[in-house]
Each structure stands twice: as structure tokens, then as C-alpha cells.
Amino acid sequence: AKALAALERAANLDSGRVSVALAANGTVVLTGHLRTLLERDTVEQAAWSASGVRHVENHITVGD
Image (cartoon, rainbow, N blue to C red; front, side, top):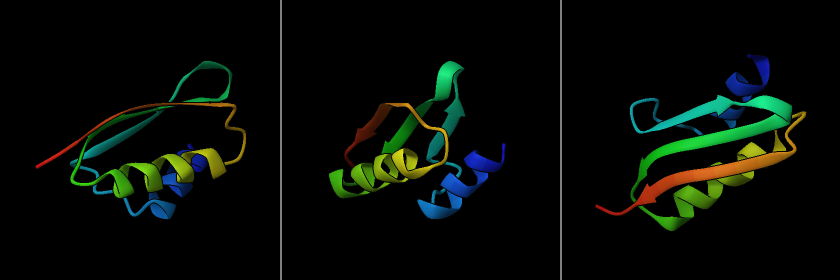
């Protein structure tokens, strides 16, 4: 829970647009919708930087 909260703060996530879930074995699952690839990449990098993360599944879609 602490790692997810830190990730959300680090990525400046809009909780209505992106969801972060911690799955088994240190896997973080990202879902939602963002406006740009840069935003998507920033969130993914923040996920990788969170303590204990071994794998990131990025299912965030991009577009208007």
C-alpha cells in the first residue's frame, strides 16, 4: 500500500484516469487513459522506480 501511494504521488496521477494495482510477485499493473505517450512513459517509469517492483504491465491507452 505504501509503495502504491508513493507511486501515485511520484507520477502525479489523476486518480480518475489511471489505476495502479499491485499483483503477485512485485508486478504493477497500470490501466487507464492518458493524453500523450510522454504521460504514459512517465507513469511507467515511476512504476519501475517504486520499491519492490519486478515487472510492470502497462495497459494505459493514449489519445484524445
